[in-house]
Image 1 (cartoon, one colour):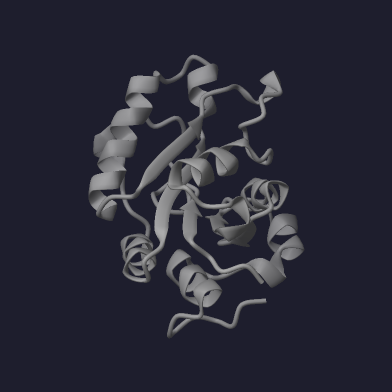
Image 2 (cartoon, one colour):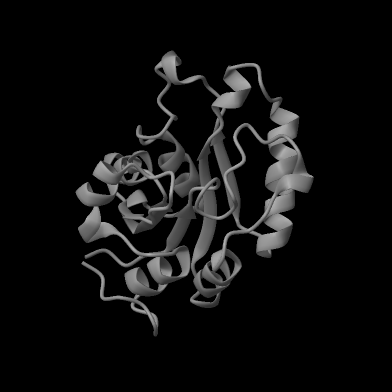
Amino acid sequence: MTTVHAVLFDRDGTLVADVPYNGDPGRVRLLPGAAAAVALARALGLATGVVSNQSGIGRGLLTTEQVHRVNERADALLGGLDTWVFCPHAPDTGCACRKPRPGLVLTAAARLGVEPAACLVIGDVAADVLAARAAGARGVLVPNAATAPAEAERFAGQSAPDVLTAVRGALGAPGGRPSS
């Protein structure tokens, strides 16, 4: 197995509470364990980043500037990540960056100077795990109330109950479940 050099997180539903099409930094709320997960990855010397679909831009519901402001607020609350990459396209555009396609993961890996195979991608829906696979990275699902039960079942062997456990388990840090 390739050594992990970077941890890439999904934003909404993984690091921050999912507020659909959020353009207001004041509505950003960290999920339990999110800041600790980012801090653990950094303490282990790993690069960190966010890979996020933001279709509200392509749908005309958000501006790129609003997404940047929300990301900046989340970044401040999380203690700072190394890169933030998002897909601004609507789902029907067929772009290469929208998860489950690999574009966001490939871009983040390139920005961080690591091979995609050395990335761990953590997210709350199948598209996150599938984007990781498509890029040659490893994916971990952290299901929540919005995760489809079929997705949780499909990726049960590649899942963790929360984002901190996902980082601990995948990296062999104390307190994590064994990685599969």
